[in-house]
Length: 153
Image 1 (spheres, rainbow, N blue to C red):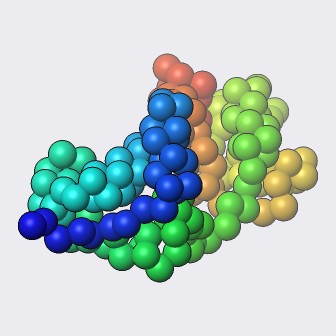
Image 2: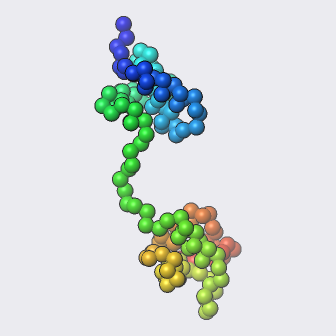
Image 3: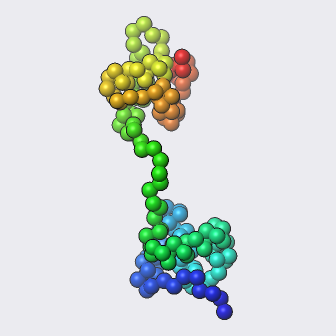
């Protein structure tokens, strides 16, 4: 006889089955829901892990988390880290500034010049030239002479 790893309540089982029918959800949530249903049907950790594409330990951890907190474990908890200081609108303004004409007396924008000008125009409270570089890099703008004319000097 196979060891039962998870005993879902009828309400939880129905919720998970309906959740899987929706189709549009993060892959991690889908895998966790599918694994719970499979464990409830009596499959082993090894079998579930293989079918879902995770390790046996992960399947075991999911079963433990379900027993501890119920279906709340399906969604990821907020992860620690430094909060975003420059929001999307500010990033767009810095990018637009980089696409504009450089100040008089300059042939092209430099990263330091962009950082200083962004603070001067109060687009952002404070920004380093390295952060400007990351913003422009994420927008796939070319930082060469053939692109918008931004240099690291």
